[in-house]
Length: 429
Image 1: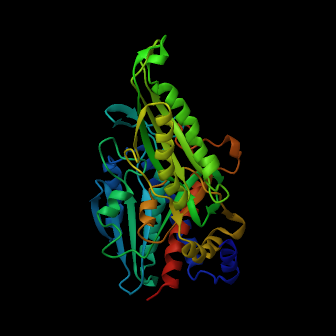
Image 2: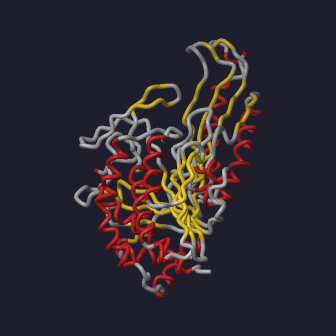
Image 3: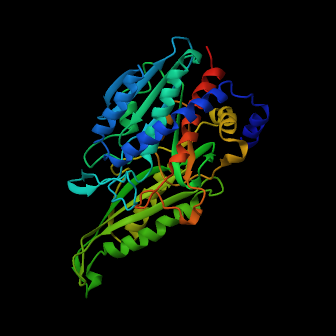
């Protein structure tokens, strides 16, 4: 497939509207920056993006678009109809912030508070969703300006709760899909991007196939028999059973999966059991997460985890119960091979070949994957790291120091616009 994509580069025509988009992106850049600063200063948590949604809605209505609000609680969808036959292209941006206290010294830093699972918390755009919204607002304005040159329709999807809905709620891309966001008009392809704090401004990273992992949280409850710690032979020890289970489960990845194909991870993040040093408890609870980058590995772990669990528990005379998935799960973020090959020339034309980087997959997750399960989609990373900052010094996502530079957004605006225009040109009806 890589050879196929590289061949596509050598055969690629120049994008018809690239120069026009460049000029329009230059003209709108300061507006995009102003939007980003406002959004960054006033972030909101998942499923609570009410003011953010109103800000987006006002912009889309001012552009004359057909607008739907309240999708998956706070989602906003705008539709641009060119009036000419052609495909429907969807562009997506996520809107929610995180319960993080910002440590950056910025005139537009966040001082907002919110409620997360019943607790009062600080709120910050610590993953760059403010830039995603601003970039999509910019692409919408440019595409409206170029309406006469479009063929087909564009759906601008502003999505809530990518970071996960609050306890007891559903949200995000999964709910938007359930509510028909990819229908009426039916979407032919969808594009999304994520800004990266450790990728240079002006760069774009891509990959075909699995780009971000499926995520499957799980819980195991091991039930034994309580006894005094001085007399362990009277017990069925769930703590010892848990220790053996944790180590044994790692061999699913290291000894049962073909890791030459794709990586996988099984992580235990929580152990809870017992009340004091000299009592062997009745039960122990383990909570963890599974990350996989291809369907076969995911299916294998779903089969292997209960098999390993039962074998260890039986050998220790204990009982074990598995809940998988625990409370939510995301599919693999999977870039359609053919669509990626067709659109790679657009990346090269927009960013320059030296700035288009083939990327390794990551074991983080993205609920953009729910859209890709329904229609072909491509998800990209664009650079937000200032050029004078070393990669090792760049603050990570989801941290109080997270920072991406305003200058990185112009490339994102151009990419969203050019991907739409080029897809329409290639698929004109």
